[in-house]
Length: 417
Ligand code: UD1
Image (cartoon, rainbow, N blue to C red; front, top):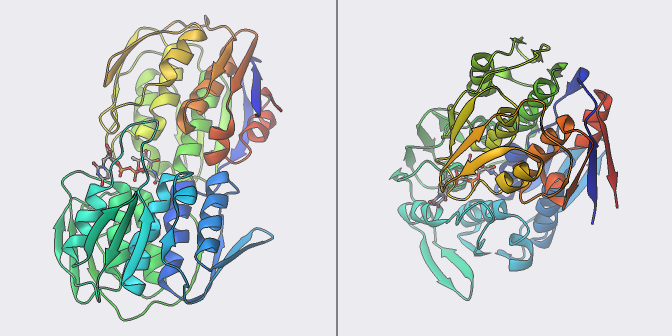
C-alpha cells in the first residue's frame, strides 16, 4: 500500500493551480443517466472516485472515456437499473445514481451505502424526498428499491440540510410531472454547478444556491457540455499549506468567493490574504493566533476543511475550540496529530487545540479518511524530521497529484510503495 513521506522543509513558495471539484463532478457524472447520447466534460479531476463513478456507469451499460483532458460519457438506454453492493460500498456518493434512474426509467435498485468512517451518514432524507415525488420505496437484502410509473412534482422540506439528498431529489424532479419545490435545500456551490448542468440539458431549475429550489418538470433532457467548477476544498487545503509553512503561495484557477468562511478565519488569525476573482495569495506570516471555528452547511465553515484547519491551529499561538456540527465522528485525525506532537483534547463534537508553534516532530501516522489525510500531510510539512503517512489511498480518492503540486512549491514529499 502506498505511503507518503513528508519532510519539514521551510516555507512553500510559488503558484499552484486548483483541479476540478470532485464533489461537483460526481453528481454531474451521475446526472448523465437522465439523458441518452454523448455528454462532454472538461476540468474533471483524475481521481479514484471518478474511476469508481465511471465503473458504476459502465456497469449500467454506459461508455466512458478520456479523450485527452476531456471526459466523455455515452449513455444508451440502460439494460440494468441496479447498482451493486461491490460498486456502492467503494464510494457513498454512488447512491446519487438513484434519482436519475428513478426519474428516467421509473425504477432503480441501489445497494444501501452502509456505514462510513466519519459517521452513520444515513440516506433517509433522499428516500423521503423520492416518496414525496410519488415513488414507492422498499428495502430488502441490503438494497433499496424505488419504483413509480411517473414521478409527480411536490413540495418537500428537508429536515436537515443535506448536500447529497438535495442533489438526488433535484435530479429526480427534473423529469417529474409538474412543479417541485425543495425547501431547506443545501446551498453548496456544487449544487449550483449540478443545477447549471441540468439546465444546460434542458431542465428548468431556479433558486439553486438558495435554500428554496424550484424545479419545473420537463418531458426530456438532452446531453450537453460542461466544465466542472474548481475544487474549493483542494484550494483551501493548498492555501493552508502556504500559511502553515510561513510561505508565500498563490492558488490559481479557484473561486475565493466559495471560501469566504475560511479566508475570514485565517485573516482573523493574522494572515494577510489577497484575492482576485480566481486567485488567492497568502503572504508569509511568522506567527498566528488561535481562532475558533464551528463547521456548518455552506456558506459557513465547511466540515471538509475542519481537519486541515486543525493542523494550522495546532501550531498557532493560543487555544482553539473546534466544533463539528455536520458529522458526529469527524475527529479521527486528532490522535494522529497528537502523534506528531500536537496538544489536542477531543470530545464527541468539540476539540480543544492548544497551539504549540514550531514544536511538531515527524512520526508514522495513519490516514483515516480523505480530509484527515490532508491534515496529516499539512502537519508533516512543518514537523521536524520525517512524517510517514500510511494508507494514502484515501488521499487519492479526492486530491489530484497533491504530492506533485506541493513539490512544485518546494515541499519535500514523495510517495513510496
Ligand atoms: C457531501 C460531500 C462531503 C461533505 C458533506 C457535507 C459529496 C460527494 N460529499 O456529503 O464531502 O463532507 O456533503 O458538506 O458531495 N443526513 C441525514 N439523512 C440523509 C442525508 C444526510 O441525516 O438522508 C445527515 C448526515 O448524516 C450528516 C448531514 O446530514 O450529518 C450532512 O450530510 P450530507 O450533506 O448529506 O453529506 P453528503 O452529501 O454525504
